Image (tube, rainbow, N blue to C red; front, side, top):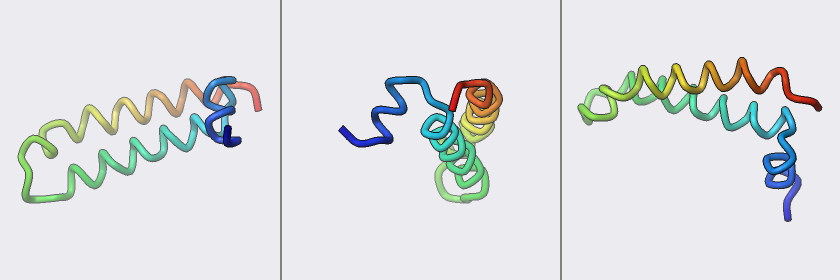
Length: 62
């Protein structure tokens, strides 16, 4: 198993922060694209979930 997957299962900070950062970036990209209405509609929720997730996982152990 890779170090990333092992870190996810062991609730370590670094892999979960990466997942939260990817969610935030995905939400921003969804917000900025002009073609798909459902992506624009859910962009705020995705960004918000990523931000809250980042705040929570920043308290996880290294």
